[in-house]
Amino acid sequence: MKLKLIDYGYKKAPERAHHNDSGADVFAVSDVVLEPRTTTKVGIGLGVELPDGYDIVMHCKSGMSSKGIFSSNAPIDAGYTGEIHAVLYNATDEPVLIKEGEKISQMVVRPVIYADYVTELNDNRGAGGFGSTGK
Image 1: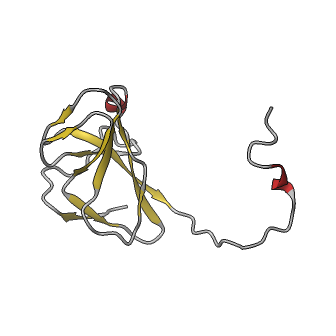
Image 2: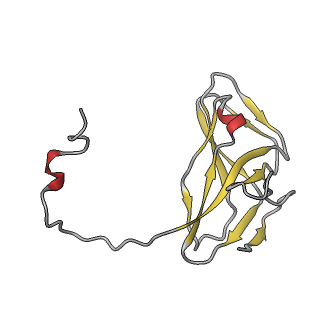
């Protein structure tokens, strides 16, 4: 699948380290300080035109998560064409400097199944409550 990138000032296009990686690394477009125990939106300078039936999730980089920096996994819907951001949480007690051009997240494109939601269920299987079958 080829996706059209929308330029919001990106310095480097997403790239995979290996051809079969599920995620493509994305890069910070400017220096940003992640304050301790806070969430910060970090621009990656691009948007994407996704076809219907797909979304994007920004996943953590393993090296960053091992240092206490986590990426939100909120989905980016096919209809959104604005700038995508990595939403990063600094779980440490120290400020962390993200430098321009640094890999900050992995962008994963996923297929989506559109569910039809019903308002009634016809069985009592769930009557015991969430987690009721585990001991």
